[in-house]
Length: 309
Image 1 (spheres, rainbow, N blue to C red):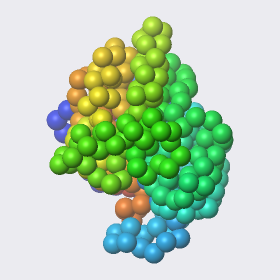
Image 2 (cartoon, helix red, strand yellow):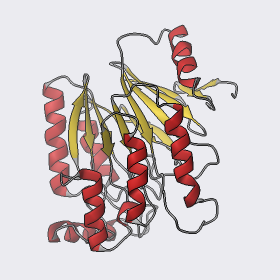
Image 3 (cartoon, rainbow, N blue to C red):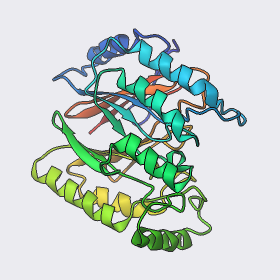
Image 4 (cartoon, one colour):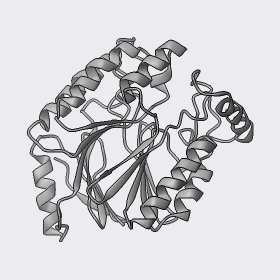
């Protein structure tokens, strides 16, 4: 276990390499006064890319399932309020999703899925099949309440050339945004964003959270801030919406950027969690949502953090 150090902005760094690390971290937090009512506790994993395709550089797709099983096994005796898959559960083969989804479900908590760009790296029929696996016939963007928190799940394939099953309006919006971001870091073939219908829905969810004085966390696959190749086409538009409701919107949590990232902007925490695929050790997190903070327990190469709200 590496020595922990504090960094500017309330960042706490430490790697965890054993199943008991979660309890040790909780005790450490209490020693610093981080106690209080029980949090909403979430097992979270991003960018698993479970697949049978050949390796590409550091990407060992066939090893991902073993790493996922190791992560799940280390926490099987613990209780979670829900399990979060932040997208790209497969790399390109839809059939590989079943085993990974089954493994996540074995933790015995509700499984909440986010759609990633690689989940749709397949034919239109494959995309429909994947959507059914992930959302059981429901919508690819949705919200749910857990404890005092509201969780708002976005679909960043709303603006994407990758998706072949979106409607004509979303397709037209996609082309408009691709033109707007030309020459910018997020002008990439695999890019995406939040369409106008979904953005209006997001505002309605934030209005409800504000009226109920309920803190909200937005969950997505693609990133917003800091700007990079992984940012959505309309990341600024989404960010402005969240800042407008900063009395309730507290965090934007995503995957997609395999080496992770963090920025505080407009009173919100923008956190990209690292990919399970990229690292030798299983890399994932346990998220604890309190009334006044979000505590990230990082495992493998994930960075533990305390995000005060």
